[in-house]
Image 1 (cartoon, each protein chain N blue to C red):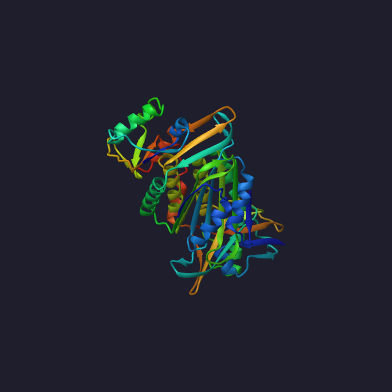
Image 2 (cartoon, rainbow over the protein chains, first blue to last red):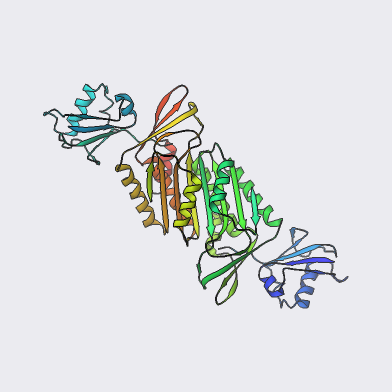
Length: 82
Length: 82
Length: 149
Length: 149
């Protein structure tokens, strides 16, 4: 099971800050993970936006970055100033 | 009797922060007051230095400014930073 | 040195604690950011903040390290709230101690620019009429570029 | 708003009092200047300050007025010690509250430049070997000219 974290407006869309989910075998990197989660969780493109950064096990990475079923993967929209 | 105030290093030279003194009749302004006090109080020129400003009744003035025997006159060397 | 907390804190307590840590310094600057009662959208009821540990802490630590490299500082303190806050509640506290005042002022200013634009926090503002995630203002980015020379 | 006192004061108390006065502000900046334990001449035993009331207060009030004209400030506080102080004792406390942080930072910085160079205070530093009246440093004058444009 992987842990997926959704921050900021993504947490509002998903309705929770995180989920634990098995990752399908065909999902091998952050790019395919984004696409799968965006469709299956009803993000309606919000997860695919370029401004949403991704971190794997607390390290910010660039797409596509390998992921496995034991990773913590975080989706981070632009941070809030003000 | 006039009140004379000496600040900063002038208070160290004079040994006190202030004195009450009758002003001689011939002393009519801040310029002649400086000269008289400098000589009679052993300031040895310290009171004549251009950097020493003078205030009459809490207003900073330019020499020569009229003084009378009921005034408060303050001699103010450069203020201390740091 | 860096604390991210979902518990309310008092500015005066933070100052008293920092003063004890910075014995011997000639200058102490503190910045406190508080939840404003009004926003463009109306009266603020709640400000909600999220952080992502340890990425948030690591980023702030790097900014503190950069400040300590740039200026001669004897102590630095950053406290940042997460969770739900009400108008008037402290959100952020930054304190710097230095032998001379210019270093203390500039380092506090620099750290606040980092915290306002690059630090990893997500902010949601809740008014009577809506709930809105906040994005950085152009003004905050502009302030931040002052340190790039 | 301005207090010149020959009694010791606590920075944390001054901050707590200022926080109460500045309810509704988004940003609070405080500067605290403390007696440094060392000077160029050695270990400092005592710092002695003289002021000339009401000229000293009037000068500070003019600087506060200028700051309030230049920046949007919701509250300003200046506390300055006179008399004898020991190393570590607070000498000066300046606090500014504003809707936004840039105004609070700049106004506090501006007021400190005034207090360090133009404010009417005479300072005597007493070390084991000597007692010396201090004059402003070139650095302080340089900081002050930043505001003349």
